[in-house]
Length: 155
Image: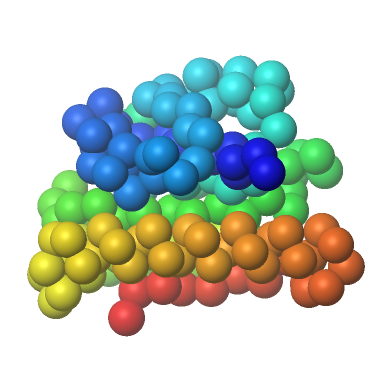
């Protein structure tokens, strides 16, 4: 059985945290710029995309839009992760959450989870969301699900 391939588009300082969630369970390609993300998406077939909200000077919306506008990429689950507090006001994060849902992505407020559940529990829960989306996506590609809903995972 082959491992699912995940594109992880995050700030360089977030890579170690994502490794704790994603490896060794999945085959992961890490990118830190929008250009590198586009190159990776053109080169490999991914089963899921994880993107930090602050990725490459807050380029997450452009990457999400690129994926949802590309017929080859549009059905790949796209998880937007708010990893820490700061940089944006709460109203801006709400707008990011809404835009993510409108474009068919999934929003995870990991910062809130860490505050409310603790660091280790929050990382474990993020791993659970990713596993669930991969299972749903796999069943959708087999004709057993819809494959392209949106949702928020922030409570």
